[in-house]
Image 1: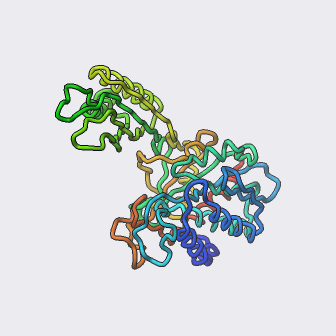
Image 2: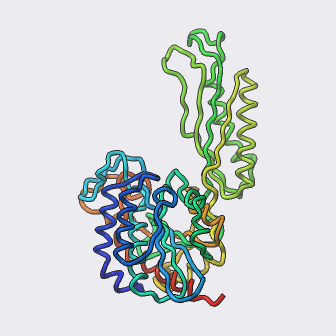
Image 3: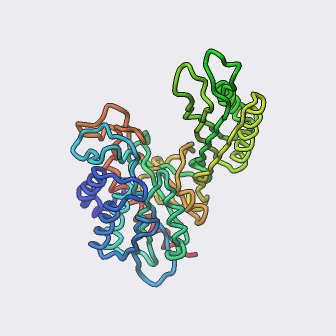
Length: 397
C-alpha cells in the first residue's frame, strides 16, 4: 500500500483524537464539543474555517495556487442514542450515547488529511473539508445545504466515505449508481371502538385489522413491484392496549420503507395507503395514514465513482478495490449527491479483531453496542482523501 509517510507518523496522535471523540459522543445538532475539537485542530494547522453551518457544522478551507476548481470532502460527526457495551478506556462517558457507526473515525480520517494538506499543498485549487452534523437522523447534510453550503463554498464535486465492517482492512469498495437506499417512515393509526374483551361483538377491534394490514403489506413487495426491483417494508412497532381484558380503541403501526428508485417508492406508498384505507373500511374502522420521505437513495455519479476507484487502486492495488454491493441502509450524503456530482465509498473496517480487551460480547457491526472503529484505517483513509483531492484538482477540464 502507498500510504503517505507523514500521515503514518501522525497516526497515533490522530488515534488519540478519535478515541477522545468516542469517549464523549454527541447526538445530531449537539456536536458542540466535537466541533470545538475539529475547529481547534484546523486552527492549529493554519486552516481558515467557517462554523455554525447546519447548527454545529464546520467547514475548513485549504487553498493553493490560482485555480478556481474546488472539491469537497465530507465526514460526519454525530453519535447514536444507544448504550455502549464496551468497557475499554475510551468507552463512552455519556450514558445512552455511543459512536456505534464510526463517525468518530470518519472525523479523524478527514483531520489526518487536513493536517497533511495544510502542510503539503501539492495542488492548485481549493479543498473544502466538510465536518457535518446529524447524519443519523437529523438530515444534517440537507440542513448545511439549506444554510448555503454549496453557495458559500462552490465546488465541482463532493465525496464521502464510510467504514464498512466485514470488508478487509486495506480494501475499498465503490461503484456507480445506487449504493444505499432511500429511508422513509410511516405511521398508521387504526381507530375502532373499545370494549370488554369478553364482548367483542359490542366493539370494533382494531388489532385484527392491524394484523391483516401487516400481512397484506408484504404482497406489495411480492406481487406489485417487479421482482428485480429492490424494496423493503418493515413494520417495526405495533402499539395497542393497556389491559388484557380490554379491547383497545386504537392500534398504531410504525415502520420504514427502503427503495433505490423513486418509481418503486411511489408504488409502495400508493399501495400501502390503499391497503390501509380499504382494509379499515372493510372492517368498519377508520384509518389515519402518514408517510414521510426522509433520505433519498444515495446514487454515485458514474464519472466520479470511476475516478475514485482509480485513486484507490493507486493506493491499495486494483485487487483491493471491490464492487460496492448496494445496501438497504440509508445515508444523508444522498442530499449532497443530488446537488453535486460525487461518490460515496466504503473503506474496510475488518471483522473486529482490532478491538481491545474490554470490548462488548457482540459483533463489531455498525449500530451494535460492541462496535469500535479500527484506528488502523486512519492513515489509509487520510491518504485516500489527500490523493483524491490532489488528483481531482490536477485534472485538465
